Image (cartoon, rainbow, N blue to C red):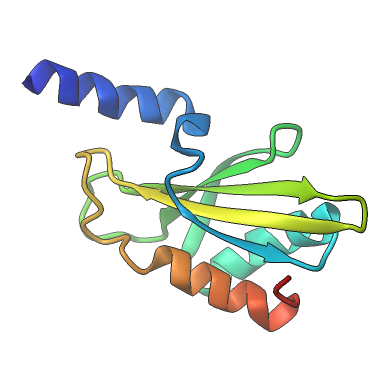
Length: 122
């Protein structure tokens, strides 16, 4: 059973897309490029850093800047175009490498609150 937990933790690190559908999703009335472009600075303002990004597949890996826990907690932020009117869906899926969200419980709320200051929720 322990081996399965360790393998599951490793798979989420190697393929962040595995977290899709497990986070908090909010739609915004803004085009992909605007939201994507605003995210790195917005995340930095609230104490997070982008460690990897893939605009083609629409995801960013995020960590707490200066986390004192040292457990490798991270989150995946997905940005997806919806419809034909320039709207996007943003999902924030926190994930600790230990399989629990020890320090990330409010990441989705913090990120979505900050996005809502810049973009209208749809």
